[in-house]
Length: 498
Image (cartoon, rainbow, N blue to C red):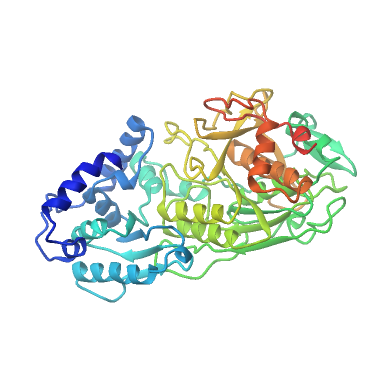
């Protein structure tokens, strides 16, 4: 910001006879050097090159033409963040700013109908139809604009097409309905007849249960939903030693390739990933011989916010934004866990994260799990945000050896042991009743760490978010000097709840 101060001052003195609004709203010709949009191939190549050379890609640092190209290639839908704050309630003139934005769009687009897809009730954010590069240029010049981004540019879908990967693979990212018999070496049987995953002893979770089981704490889960076929995460959520708690299932995802489609498709998991995460956090402790969760007496508020873990496209990104704001407004929720993300920032999701954080929520996000064409990426978004706690998975008996598919980097805050020498990961409930499975990556590391936070907060119900977080840090491997790539490392949960 500071490097632009001299230029801004010079412009101010040169144009003292003109105010900024006049400059923005004049119909003076704009020089547009490139009239044709870049192809999806060119856009993806530029994004990849920027990540490889700079470590991170940002729409904010991109040219008008580049952003317009991505908007054009993404169903001509733009996401706009405006106002001095992300929070609409903190911006008295938000409506007038929104009106001014629409007037600019109308002027350059030459139409006034069918411009707005959505206007967020809590955030200073809206989604609009934009076809012309002139509109993007004019919008980005407005003083009250925080960002203008493509709202439906599908990086991952385009990358798969460019790499010749079948489109069907994109629909199954992080998904699976398989069931697997558990190896007896991968769990410990605890009363009354539940399977405690091998990782629990590594983090001293079983001993920590003498002090806390997560009772009274509610975790918000942003994922693909929870299976309606798994009664232990439904009607039998209170079972055995798990009692007096609740699970609430919600859905804010629109299952359509068209941005203008509406109508949520329900709360039921159609991927399998969200079911695994809910199990790792809070599956009940009973006599059925099934895997138990870290905080087996915690409440859950689950959301089907996206179809899978890769937040690619309008409805997935919009669903996650909506979920963050709804969980932010839910006074019973103390912790939010999301094991999904993107390799670059999404303005509306960033606003949603900040909104939830401003409401006192402790937010955990997955540091990233590699795919064939994203193994060059470090910690993913939104885990890299300062408002979130980034978690990654490490190998058994280590705190600085990431799992084979996990990401690491300076933004990581905590690690969780989730990969054995045998290659097996964490036992969880399967999608279907009476069945079990394994789940790995930074996803289960994040869900498990959210469960740990619930144990700490349950033991200390009057504590603030920062007090809970500090206790977790103090009970971890590298406190008080975090590791450059693995943060505070593994948490000793018994120490954290004593």
